[in-house]
Image (cartoon, rainbow, N blue to C red):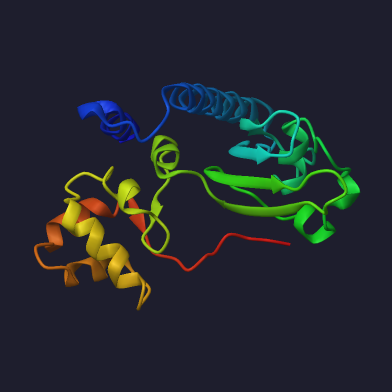
Length: 211
């Protein structure tokens, strides 16, 4: 499944994901799976429960090392937080950790998400958490949200004709998508196509998270 998705992103001259970003994500994804395998076999040999899996997140803006990062929780019993992801990105470049609201600092992040930090000098920083670009999410094996993906991102999905992408975006402007099955409401989209899209699409109402 993963290899099929990767091929679709780089085939037919599509340039929806920068080659350097593509290489960085695939490398981190490979490391991610190696780490999981090592932990799995280690847990078997020691009878200890495996520690939480690391996550692959993008941290952009006013941090010292913006980009894609493989982040592990500093607490073996917890998930990865916004604060840990920012620390993995070298910390804030123009502010101090104390400028991050505590509730946001402890917010859980998952693979395929992007943390944005804006603000310079004495201006209070602004933070948000949302999905990475569609091409990056598909490279990681993540699904695109019908209520957020752009027409360009939706065009990466197999069997997704331009008019289908247009109708998806048009429909949600007045009524959000509640399930992938609802795509059958679009003229020309049948059950078999929707079944195939289940591997690439989801419908939720999550908006970018801000403190």
